Image (tube, rainbow, N blue to C red; front, side):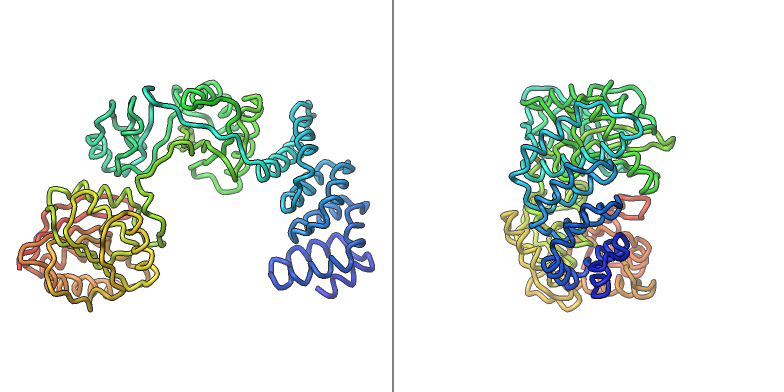
Length: 493
């Protein structure tokens, strides 16, 4: 860095050196050193914002943003106003987004409004759109967005419960407040009691489909036209007390590579803003509407909306999770499928409890008397205790390897999400499942159940052949692609 600063003082290779400096300050120690140097040489660095080379001005502006260098606010704002090269203007705004621009907000709002009302030549459109996005980011960061209130009481709405595809019928049968039919993405429901429907625990998420024939094309402009024609604004207005502007982001699920998907998303967002006359506003950091486009095998898109205004409190207890944690809706679905094998006031054990999700959902489906969980990962146990307190239940968690666990009384059930293989060899997994079933005999009552979620069904079935105390009562495929199964195993000691 010392050499770079010396060359900058001599006005040598300014553009390249500023770029190199920006790369170096990703290191926090070098960043602190750079801030000190900029303070010492502040007039020099401010001078770079007036350099004849446009890319030098851009690099200088972005450097101030990278450093969150507050004394640069006024200089950046003046440089932005005086800038004639369009592709540089957004860079000043990007830098200012990292600084306190409170006193500049009225002026920035006026500039944004002028840009939105100005007809732009085609060759300048890309740069003006970047400037608009940068201005909106600053304003949203400082002022937030217009918030809406969901208003569906007594209204019939159409939603899709996103679910485990292979278990859609199970979830469809649970719907008792509307007309439910199977849908490729889950279960489609027409209901006038959305709040009641949302309390079901077995679906993953809820979305609102746009009412349209067919699918959207993989062309950004035509896709935007299709959504406007499908009355996306009318749907949003019908679901909320307030109208006005809606801030959105776009989520595209397709086989497109990241670069192509990003380009498509940016263009689509801009087209939606234009075609909605500014009522739809793209904001990736603060938004209430997520527009989801899900590609089919032909590369066409099914559009639906996920709304942040829909408040769902099913899993509020799940404050903490780790990478291996099962999704609570999957745990709830497992308990629904296994409910006929559960008994009230049972004594339950989860040998690999993680953050406690399986035990909490088991208790919600059929109340237990005593519940214990063990795990070798101490952080998971700490998380489980906090989650369980939020759930308002009592579960005893022990930071210990299940194979070393001992208890004075026996358990009626083992309920568990079995550990993933990870880096273990086939032989190690074979030994693990053998040891698990042997250990289970020590803690299970004379007649007991094991409710197991696993993607190692082969190792399980081998032990069931070898160990005659166990019998397979139910086998349910949950995820065919990854070979996850729910297994209900009976035990007689």
